[in-house]
Figure 1 (cartoon, rainbow, N blue to C red):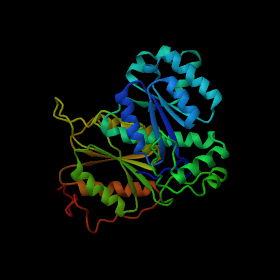
Figure 2: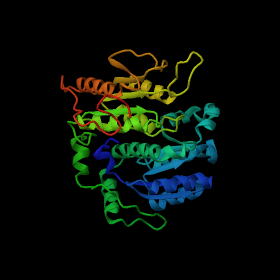
Figure 3: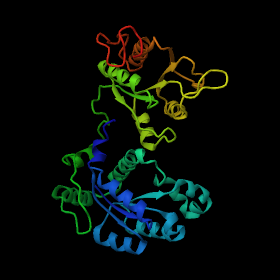
Figure 4: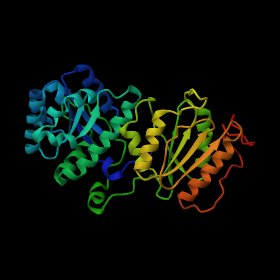
Length: 352
């Protein structure tokens, strides 16, 4: 995973969850407590309790479900709080499918602003929820960086250092150091790369292909790349994954066989095509490694490379992909290193 923006990630968040659904409120509250830069997370069931908690505990981030709370009531609450506490960031924590059905009402009039709010889908699959929540938290930190006054930031950072959250809030120890935050905020952002000179490549693949991907990742790392991947449920490409694709320098997609078609050729997984489409939309340099027999890898425009491979040609294809990625990243004509092929790649160029 890519390192996150230092200036943003050092801003601790105190989060209030407003959700009458106890099960989803508890799920979110527990998830927030596992986020290293959330120093407090508290859930309340209604807007009355939320108003009291805001006066008492001064959260800087609020997750709420406008559908379950009532769209009119929730919108009045949000806009009233925004007038009084302009530094609070709001996240709409709701069922996106239900929201889409009520789109006309949800975004009517002044509520058009909601279309620009951060959002988290209650239907996010369990194995993607942590990453998706993390992406939203990072966005909230970035938003807070510009919203919060120096006085409030200083007070919040002192609270984080002391780990002395008010009653009703469970403090979570911050992992990152908070020193130097104001210098970063006033002097410009740092790079979001863990090492500025290390090129990053997002590797997209079917999660059934661990035999292929283990060796491929090691080969890339041996040749100077930082490898970024994303979790998937085979049907859901999360915002967290899209953020990683956008932040990477280049995109490598391993398109292997999925389902056989009537003509004997094969499809690949639909989410690989979605990730490839996202990479294309973000203007990334793309390399496709396509298994023989796969025919639905889609069209591309621009600077890209397609490499086909069979059962006995995976290593050769991987080396060719690395050469192309090196060219994209400005490493020139350097040949990829594979003196000792990683586990999962054979010296004869055969997939193990």
